[in-house]
Amino acid sequence: MKRTWRLNDTLLTEVSLRDQITQTLTNDFTENEMDDVSDMTVWEAHKSVIRGKLIQLASQRKKEAGRLMSELIDQINTPETQHKRSQVEDTYKELLEARRQLHTLLLQRHLRQLRRSKGFFYLHANKGGKLLAHMLKGQQQPAQVHKLKLQGVTTTQHLERIANEFLNYYSSLYDTHKQGDEHERTKRDRIEHFI
Image: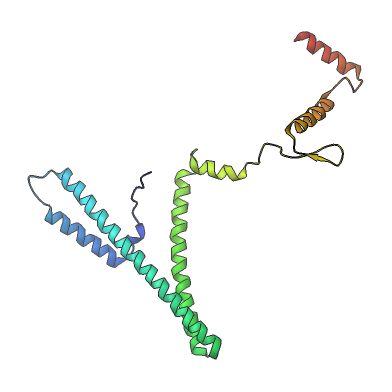
């Protein structure tokens, strides 16, 4: 299955990235302004250029976030070992600051994932498809009985014995002949006669 490209809307919130996108837009339109090329062709080319620029910016941003996270983890590990040895207040403050920055970075990542999953559920929640099938798969109980406790203490796993036990139970439950009620017998006789 081919994945379709989706705009990372958080790229548009940062002013520096938005300026780069605007600059790319203006440059692309000025460079490709030709009289002999149709407007539709220019527009299709423009969409490809801007999509490539957005993918480039998203990739740079992702690499930067990964680098920042590894730096923060290193900044946490070093003061942590120093603080365990010396119990100095300055290293503790440095450790807390690095942990706070890491927490902020992880929180941003989780919020972005939450926004994407909310959008996905909003789009697919009321439709029958893979999402609904996957959600119902875990909720369904197995319908087949694999083991049954017989009238005594013994249990069985043989399918024929299980089927016979169910047959005996429901036959005795719904058998009106054993109840001895004359009215029920006449009802049954009338039903059988009708059929």
